[in-house]
Length: 273
Ligand SMILES: C[S@@+](CC[C@H](N)C(=O)[O-])C[C@H]1O[C@@H](n2cnc3c(N)ncnc32)[C@H](O)[C@@H]1O
Image (cartoon, rainbow, N blue to C red):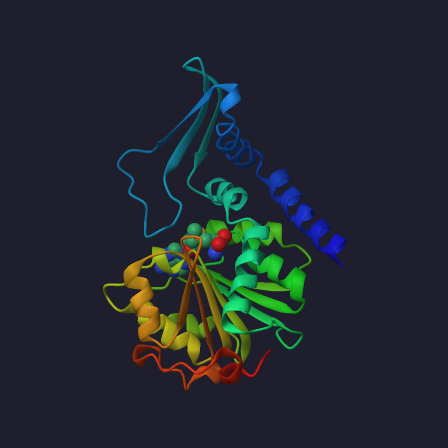
């Protein structure tokens, strides 16, 4: 089982490396620069005057590896599938994803067991996390993202995994409902809510909408005080681990009013462990 899981991750990396070799090279430059003994420097220059759109990869980036101030490798990635594929190689590692999922399960007294078999990831990007989740737990999924090129990479990476993809930008917060199948078991947010503006209330509407259609909602996001307050305000439980916010909500958790600090003990409220 473990060997099968690792083979699938290797195949996923191989498929993206084969389809997007320049993205792999750019990601390798990012890794190589961290080897201090080589004395390498690194430069990344982005297309001037093209602001990023709300967390989407955009514009054009030039990656150079310098030795004695001279570029020895240069790669240019343009907006489009190359930038999305580049992110694929640098996305949260699968090992890190499962470490944080383990912390979520321990913290909130939850055990993902065999009855969790349908997944949705909002802001799935190039599909590495949702692919690995389905490899680990089986079942099927839907990946939703507002960046079409990332979905192109996700499709290339997840051949043979039961995932449907939907192109949807979170603008009001409730539009995602159209793309989430009814009674889905688990909705995942991984490094996406921090990219969605919170001032206009769309994150709150998004959380409320998702709660209507899923049994479990979990997330792993960079620490952000405003987002933490919004999550807690929606009755979502938040824990901090390694400067990341891990959060969890269950439909059996309706008795939990985190704002008043009257959460039931996790096992009691969830009944899943
Ligand atoms: C940092 S990536 C995370 C990708 C993936 N969840 C992971 O952890 O590897 C953030 C993703 O959120 C998507 N995104 C950002 N803002 C969005 C929005 N308003 N609507 C839909 N997707 C959005 C981006 O296109 C990108 O793929």
